[in-house]
Length: 431
Image (cartoon, rainbow, N blue to C red; front, side, top):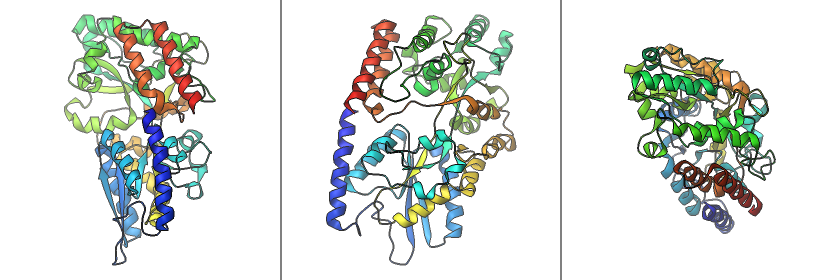
């Protein structure tokens, strides 16, 4: 990941040189997208095929208002998306509009690759968390807030019924996860809560519930040396010792979602962004599963024990490009109430636009899915933005690898957390 950061910096210099010598007039993003017949062709790159219909619905609404513009939504899977985007930067052929993730936006923005969109975003309609997801290190907006999310506890109602265990509710704590999982395992032989080594869909939530943190508020140091963080990590990694929780070797070959919907496990953490796809992919499970708010820490070091890690994507365009004016106008529409409403009504994701949360919730009701999607909205009240910094790409992979060392027993918890802390601190100091 360190090589990637240096690579993007070099690319930014290369792009700047290309633009300077080419006069910025004929080169740039979407270099293939112009047209001699007066029509402007824009490419719109995303990585989630489950949201393609929603993005196309927004594009269609915009094209109806601008018949001289044609927008093509292009889907590339997650891993290939970033490889392709880097190649686009190198060849100066970025898509006209593309999604940005918080994992990457600081790198791209600080390298001068993204356009400053501060002038086209009405910040009064977006939360501070949504706006922070769209900012570069200089505080300017380099993306239009797209959506927001939260994490919920998904549970299998049939397995709970078979074990005679009451469904999860707002009063649940970590202790209830353990006791319910044990009862379900004893009665059915199925896994209880499936705790896998993930960040936003795993241990991050527990760390913040306990009053700890992954990254310090000033983003210069890790939080794995904090008592609350250690408490949460001990609990979360310790779940693997129970028979009702699969180990990480199991998760290397089986995703929690696949295990859950095949009836092998009773609970796991899932993001709001996957809800509609899962309802549609498993229609036979309708009414047999639901979602609850995350159980709270029963004895947090600080705070009230409640937290869910929230994140959000942004729409972006290149700093220079042949169709920049048209791209910026479409970006403005994407961030408007109309554009965000279409996204919500499509079920693609919870709109970042404040006040439009019901558009997403109502999709499930209108389609007849028996899922309490409102729970995801309720948790936004205590949502914690995912830890992010310019140095995160340099330590993310290594920290995750160290966590697996703890799980495997190759490192003790204290040794592993100390090493994770060092990895974050060193990477931050280098930036």
